[in-house]
Amino acid sequence: MRQFDFDKLKYLYGTVPVILVIHFFSVLLFSVIMWHYVDNLSLAVWVSVSIIVLLFRFYHYLLYSNSSDEELRAQSTL
Image 1 (cartoon, one colour):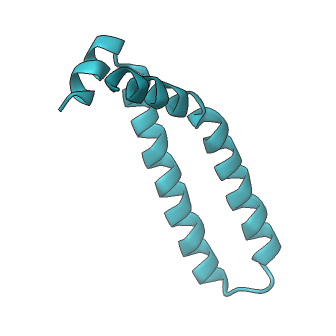
Image 2 (image 1 turned 90 degrees about the horizontal axis):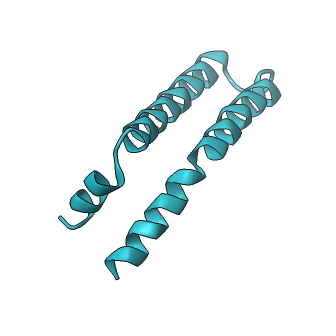
């Protein structure tokens, strides 16, 4: 069962770069569409929070990609 969970984790982290790019462009597209309909301050706050979440996810992806499989297996058994 642990091997299955580890393989699932590797698969999910393998898709993170694509998800981050889609997240970034969807934030930009939504903010451009809503620019004339929503208060600009509210939109700026929303974009800022979305970018912070995106950077947080990227940071965790970097931590994962710089870890070896042995380290990841040891942490997954906790």
